[in-house]
Image (tube, rainbow, N blue to C red; front, side, top):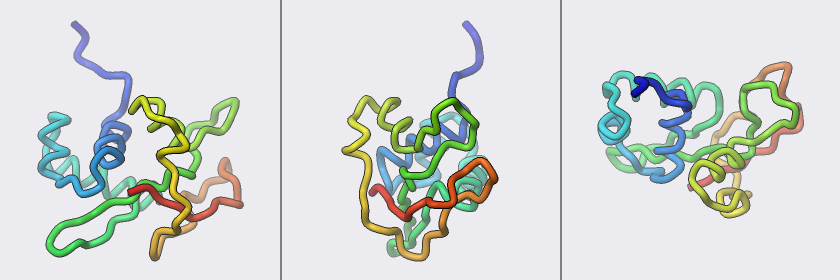
Amino acid sequence: MANWTFLTNHARVLLCIASDPGVRLRDIAASLGITERSAYGIVTDLAEAGYVVKQKDGRRNRYQVQVHLPLPEPTRRERTVGEVLALLAGTDAGAMTDTHPAPNSSAGPETSRRSNSIRSGNVE
């Protein structure tokens, strides 16, 4: 059997966070078979790119996925993070969206491919 997956570790971490916004890095690492350090690096990448907003909740972190943002890949039809997460999780895309703005969230990833009219939003 092949020793590879269709999804990158970044996508797999995003799925973990979408399914449990209070997930610990230790649990992400264990469920994906990666190191805690790798999980931390991936979550940092996702946060710096604007796809995840990290908030302190006591001694732990809670994450909010910015589902309204487009994927970083150019496609024929621009898809949002929420649409892909809904597809992979087997849920309705409308159920994964939330119109409440994330506190202190950035406008999102800044690339020439993305629309300048990105709204703030989150999923808990």
